[in-house]
Image (cartoon, rainbow, N blue to C red; front, side, top):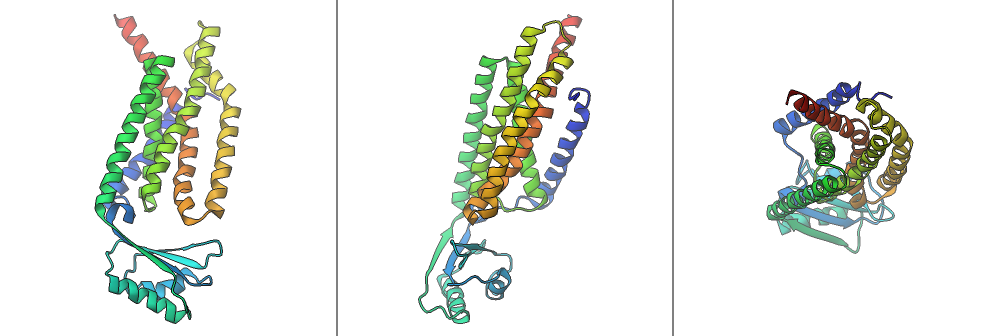
Length: 290
C-alpha cells in the first residue's frame, strides 16, 4: 500500500464530493428541520400501525412537505413534523380527522411548536463548541507530537465535517439538533484514529531515522491498518444496528454517525498522513533554499 504515491487520487475523491456538496448547498441550501426553521410537531397514538401513505391522505391537506414517521414500540403512533406554524384549530382538526378515520375513542396526542430562535441558539453553541474542541485538539497534538501533526489532524477533521455536510446537502437529508450532536461526536472519534497512526509514524521515525519519509508513512499505515479497520467496523456495525432497529430519535443521530465513521476512517488513513508529508517536504525545501 503506497498511500503517499496515490495521495492525489485520495485528494481528488474527497474534493469531488465536497465541491459537489458545496454546489448543492449553494443552490438548494441545507434541508433544515424544524429545530432550526421553527414549525409544529404533532404526535398521535393511532392504536395500530398505518402506512405513511395512509397518514398523508390527511396530513397533505395541511402541509404536503411535512415528515411523517412511526414511533413507539409497536409502531402504533405517528409523529408529524411540519415547518409550518399550525394554529391550535388546525392541530385539533388533524387529530379529529385521524380519530374519525381510525375509530380512536380516547385521543392520545402531544403537540409542540418550535420557534426559529431555538435554531439560532443551537447553531451558535455548536459553532462555539466545535471551535473550542478544535483549539483544544490543536494544542494537545502540538504538545504531544508537533505543530505540523496538529495542522494535518485538524485538516482531516474538517474533511470529515465537510464530507458529512456534503452528503446531507446532496441527498437533502433533514438537518436537526441531533445532527449537531453527531458532528461533535465525529470530531472526537476521527481524531482518535489519526493520533494512533501519527503515534506509529513517530515511533518509526525514532527506530529508522535515515529511512525515507514516504516509506515510514506507508509502513506506519500498513501496521495500523488492521487495528483501524477492525475498530471502525466494530463501531460501524453497532451504529448500523441502532439505525435499523432504533426509534426515530436514535436514527437521526445514528445516520450522520455512519457517514462520519466511514469518512473519519478514510481521512485517518488517506488524508491526514499525506498532508503531514506535504508539510514536512515544504519545510525541507525551505531549509535547503536557506
